[in-house]
Length: 157
Image (tube, rainbow, N blue to C red):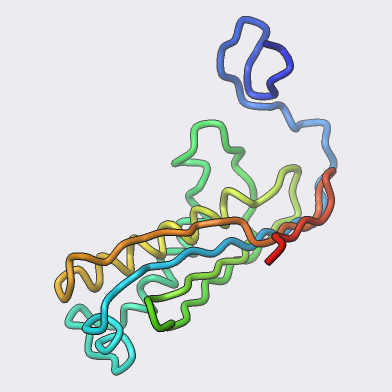
């Protein structure tokens, strides 16, 4: 079982020790969708969501989520989130959420980017659920990452 980085020799979960690694500049971008119907899309497009500015709330929630990642994922390292952006784009079938997180640290920010998208999506659903309870979250995925030992990676379209 020692071939698994997050298990010790006895098979118990452990946090990988990154103490000896040198900090490097790293970035990760993730995306996801909040699928919603015409009523929600109309309310979002003309700023008539009863709870207020849904995109602003989702954007801030996503940034906050990136910074809280290590509190939510038990084996994630506490790292400095040095930059985070969350963008929301109205589409025909819902809202595309894209988050980019940057750091200069010993481990990557892929999970922080995933968390930013997930929390932004949850916040958006919370803002519009009074209009339509059938909204769904899906297609959360890593789009690209840079830095670290494995180098750059980009999802093929």
